[in-house]
Image 1 (cartoon, one colour):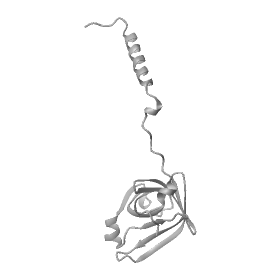
Image 2 (cartoon, rainbow, N blue to C red):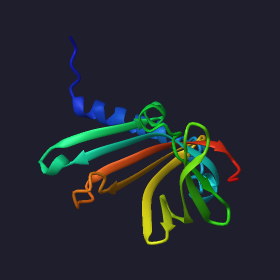
Image 3 (cartoon, rainbow, N blue to C red):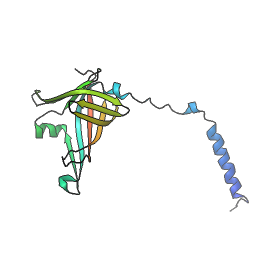
Image 4 (tube, rainbow, N blue to C red):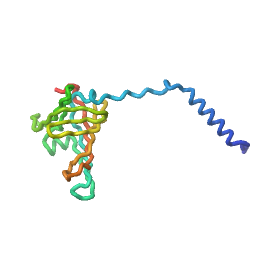
Length: 170
């Protein structure tokens, strides 16, 4: 086997060649990234909750963990209700509606909504909710920390998956 007298020189020449080939590509050769969506525009319309996931920390006052998941099927079978629907209007008003399986409204809340970066802020009389939102392709996830188990600590991770069911908020 022939060994080069200067192995480091061969490696250096190879690296220079590779770097020269890479520098021939102009910045315009790179694929364009999709423009970030404007969350405020993205959310206008009607959204139905598809699933809720909650990771409950320190469940039942113990140093423990419990996960809860509510799907459409659970809403129907356990609660005899349809999953909640959010209506986000262009005038920054919203409402959340719970209907029974016959379509009658059994609970409703309303207030104003706004966005700040990737955060959705829902304000109702006496209560404000903040969610980090990822939205696109007719789906959105709302994520926040809250006191789901009512133990006095906002240490439970709440995430809901929404699907757009209409571009209208009526």
